[in-house]
Picture 1 (cartoon, rainbow, N blue to C red):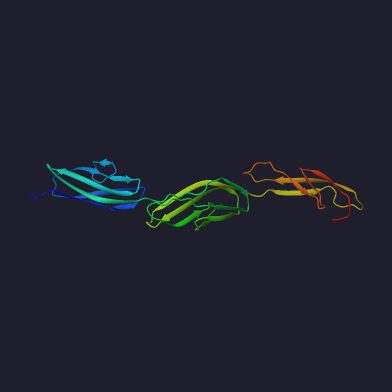
Picture 2: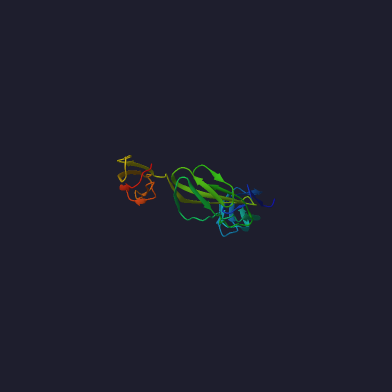
Length: 231
């Protein structure tokens, strides 16, 4: 009678963490009934014919299987190599400003088993950058999610997302003087202001006036006296 034998098969025996790998086996000289006993090499077991095991951390593992059929047993094993992936990180201080709004972000990623070779920033407005430490100008308002994808020399990828940029349109301001010309000073002019802020910002604001004669003021609606000729 021919001896029972088994060989482990799989689409891949290596990858980047975290990695799911599915294995099978080629069994020869088996009877009608075959029992499987798998060990992933990282503590997981299975009795399926084609199990899937998860490898969350980088390292070298040995996957093994023992098959039993008609009172006979056969075993096989195969080495699994999992590369530790890089971890993408960047400074995540919330950023708030008005258009055009300039931001600069610093890469804080940590490498896995190989040096990081490329960086790809997604700014949340359809634009990208490939510098390690990147800068960007937001021209439109919105609450934006920034992400960074890093790739290392093993081809392993790390990605991190953060909703951290709140960009508002600049407020619009109009000023109406109730008197705009007069023959002789002094001339007392009441000014009326109108301010419209973006919907995603608070309605609070501060108005600072420059009256054109070297004098300034603060407030919504002010009255100013011009004491000399000019325009």
